[in-house]
Each structure stands twice: as C-alpha cells, then as structure tokens.
Image (tube, rainbow over all chains, first blue to last red; front, side, top):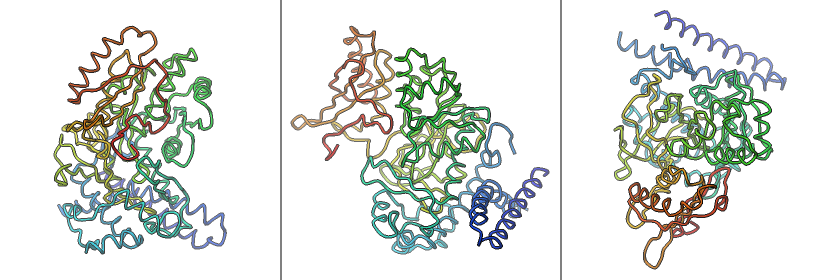
Length: 67
Length: 442
C-alpha cells in the first residue's frame, strides 16, 4: 500500500515536471536556448513516463477492475 | 515491488498478466501513432482494411500486417529524403542518422528524434545494469564511432548509469589495449569476433588479457556470446563473464543476458516479441518451439517498428531466470536467421552449429570459413579452420574429431582444410564466415 502510494506520487511528480516544462516552452520558445534545452528536458520526462506513469496506469486500471 | 539489481524493479518484476496488459496498452498507442503520422503505415493498414480501433484484444495483434526489411527499403525511395514516407515526424525533428550494415541488401536508413535517442539509451541501460555495470566502472568502447548504431547507444547508456566512458574510436587494436591497460578499465563492449581478436593481439604484445583487470564484457552484433563454445573462449581469454546483448538498427536494444547467464531476457516492457512457427506462421507461446521473431518496438516514434519480421530464429526458454525478472528468457539467444539457415544436401544447416563445434576444439584457432558450393549436381561444404600455434602435428586427430562432431551436430559431411594459424581473414564487425556460392552473390 505504501509503495503504491509512493508510485502515484512519483507519477504525479513526473506530470508536474511535464506541465512546468511545457509552460516554459510556451513562454520561452522565442529563445532558442530555452526552447532546445526544454525539448531535451521533455525527452527525458517522456522516458520517466514510460518507466513509471504507464505502469501506474495499468496497475490502477486492474485494481479498479478487481475492486 | 522487488528490490535488487534491477534498473527498474517496477517493470522488470511486474507480474506476467500486468506486463501483458502494459504491452497491449502500448501496442494500441504505437499503432494509433503510426496510423496518424506515418503515410507508409496508414497505407499498409488501409489496404488491409484495418483501423487501430479494430484491435480490441491481445489476440487481435496477429491481425496487424507485418513489415519486413524489403518494405522499409521500398518506403525509403519515397520522399522525404532519405527516410521515405515511413517517417512519422517532421524531418526537422530528426536528430540522429544511422543505417543498417547492408549485409542483406541496400542499407536501410534509420531516423531518430532526440526522444527516440533517449529511448535507445534507456533500453541499453537495462542491458548494462543487468550485467553489473555501475557508476564505479570505467568502460572502454573499442568501436569506430560511425554510421552504424552498434555501441553508440551503449556509450550513452553507460553515461546514464554513471559509468566513466572512454571512447576508443580511431585507435588501432594495439593502442586500444594499451589505453585499457593505462586507464585500468573495468569493462568493454565489442563484437564477439573483436573480443577474441583483441585477446589474440594482446597475447602477441606479450600481455595476458586476464591481467588487464576487465570485470565484464558486453558483446553485440553477432550471436557469439550465446554460442557456448565461443562464450567459453572469450571468458577464458579475458578471465571475466561475457554477456550477450541483442538488438538491431530498425528495432532497438531488445534483449540481454543478466549476470545469471541463464538465457537472453527480452525487455518486454519496451518490446513485444511474437514467435511465429516456421512452417505454419502461427504465433506460438510454447516454450522450446523454434520460430521466427516478429517484434514491435512499443515506444519508438520517428520511424515506428510495428510487427517487424526480423527473420531471426528464436525459442522461448522453458524456465524462468533465477534473477527474479519476469521478462521471459530466450534459449540460446538468436539461434540463426531464416535467410541464413539453408538446406544443404537436403538437411537444414545453421552456421552457428558449425561455430559451436569449431570453437569447442581447443587445438583450433578462433577463425573459420564455410563455403557451400555445387560439385556437379551435388552440394559441397568446405570448412577451413586454423591450427593453433604449438598444435602443429595434431592435424590428423583434429580432423577426425571435427568430422565426427560435425556429423553429430549437423548431420552432414564436410571437406575440411586445416590452414596455418593467421591465414584466414580477420574481422572486426559483421564477420562473413559463411559463404553460399549456390546463391547469387553468395
């Protein structure tokens, strides 16, 4: 239960970083240095989504089905 | 969630049924992505009368048309240059160019965005972490950094893990050995052929490779690290474990041995591997049954790889690995390729079986060459091997043993030539030791 809660928190943290980075991209896209570096941040965030968020969704989905 | 030597314990120990759900979710997502963004895939599916929404169960995946290398070559003739209309992102988003070696025909060009490149190195991070690479390692990469993907992603993954990476690019073999010695490197990555070649060169330099302090080696590019006799030779020469990794330019880094060395794990969180029966084409989950690999890279975006007919022959192992990963094991890695396994004298012959015999005989060198040709109406197999220095005079008994073991292992007779040590060609990548002169261009 504790681990499950922690995973959800990690997934939410990843989504927060994504929202923040997307906001930066919107505000700073005219600055190439901001745009290009934020794109790299987003590429890393995508890996975190693959590593955590996808599976948290699957675990959440199966729990709903079972519960 | 299990702890232990996992890059991501959450995924690597996920119960099988959850893993299958994850694969299905991701398969639907990449299918939709390809349908929406890649003209090649959209056309392929429309011609088959299939829409992504038609895939409602795991079993439906087998309805999705396969792609093969020939189709990729065809697609790249269309704009945009040089990747063709398989490309699923705007050309300006591509940051990486790589290409296949062209061993089986025109090279296939591979586009990756930075997102894809992060994904490549992430897949490799699973490989290296499972093989014991840690931040305390100093990793030497004796690879001619070039248009082939080979160890590029291994380099980035080692950095990601926190290792110190030494790029041994433009150095020759002797200089590479000296550099590894000078820097007290603890690991390296190379093809099996080059791993054996470096050991041989080190010995010629008066250096015992075992004294270099290498603790682990990762092999890729050829099947040698899953061929027991070749693996044994490499491990004996270097005095450390040698691990297999399997991947391909069009697919990604999909398979790896872990430190338990009980087979090759498929990274089933990132790839969907289906095994198709060689005769019927039916998808089989049955352990121990050989079949052709059809593989999907579940997260690759710029040039999606969906149900790719790899032509690799594999079989699921009958056991789970002692490491605790739920990612299934393949027995013996890639057992051969459907386009390499050839009928000689009416018998199916896999070149890897010959390698297993040759490298199992200690009096023989690492190199060998097989030439299949026609003598009149009959198939003829000529096997050339090298006698090791110091073993001259033992040719007769070696010849007898070779004949006997080859007959047992492959059910075929061979003409055998024993050559002096050092006289057969040496290779660094993609060794061409099997020549079928019956085929055009063989």
